[in-house]
Length: 266
Image (cartoon, rainbow, N blue to C red; front, side, top):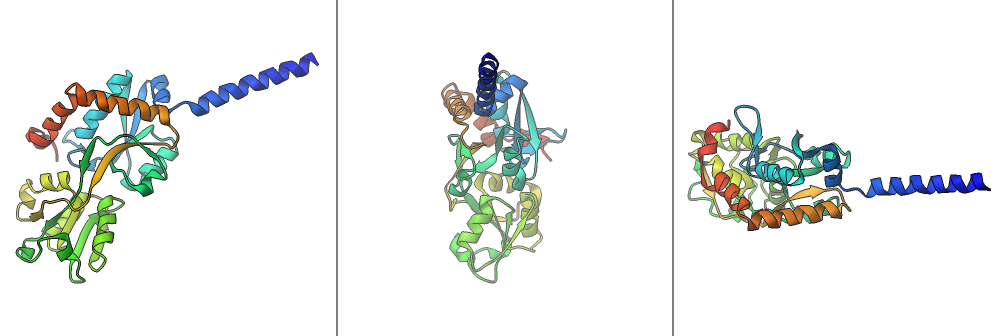
């Protein structure tokens, strides 16, 4: 009887420990490990990109560095293709997604999002031959137009939604999509407004035209596994704190108002 009672107590203790581990959030794991692992695709200028030394830098990366310092841990960026971010999170290859990800209803069914840290929208870059012919996204919805987007992004989804009559092609990186327009293979490229604005400043792209008014509303946020409300709570409070103490404004000015960083990026 005593032996059975002790066994029951032991099994109960094991169950409690197991339950505690299951309920531990991603940030709790990061603190225990001493490292915050973040999945990212470093092709989204100026949010995450690779500099000439091979380091991943950018506005969102700087936010993640500030987040790691607040947690008292190191930051480890895990670079994966954009289409593998969700599966990587589910497979616990990293603790959260920090990769310029737009909050959508479809994605929100598969993961939880933090509060948005910035709102962007899709804009259009045009080949010069379309000067005077295209003044809005609606003007591109014709079978004769070839539209380039980046695979797996909300730009691709927006093109499918607004440009059903046009011929759509997707590419692995936004740089490839822009090159399609520069070379004349495509008529237009659709991507987030911050990226397109900066792409227009590059010498090889300066002949392109732009429809600068965004035609979508897209909040960007950090993504975590569903049910990790403790981590979400901490991140949301962190975002509020950096918005209030001037950290966010300082980083925003560095990446969106100054241009010094461009000389360090390929």
